[in-house]
Length: 100
Image (cartoon, rainbow, N blue to C red; front, side, top):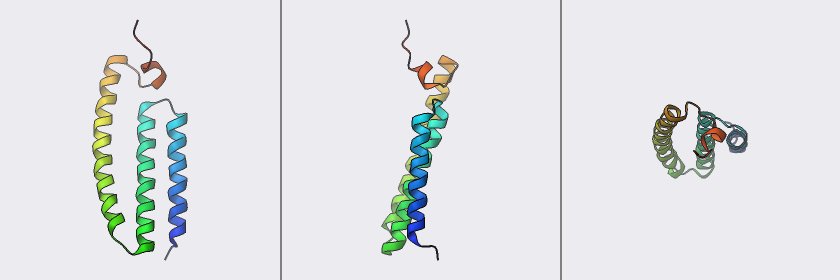
């Protein structure tokens, strides 16, 4: 069996990669994907600590997080589509400019 420390290390790596993706990328879709990556990193950490503590509470939290992440992705993609229809671009810097 794989030690839980490896899962925690993988979770930390995915969290850092997601955070870098949110900070560096200017595309809203890439930022949304990076946010989902960070949520999955949290899920891996919950399952890893759940494996260590022999408790099922972490797995219950994972199901709630997956449900919330699916709703977030649906709402986020809907908003991105509406922004694209108005601005014809999904670049954060171009979208945040004021009209005038």
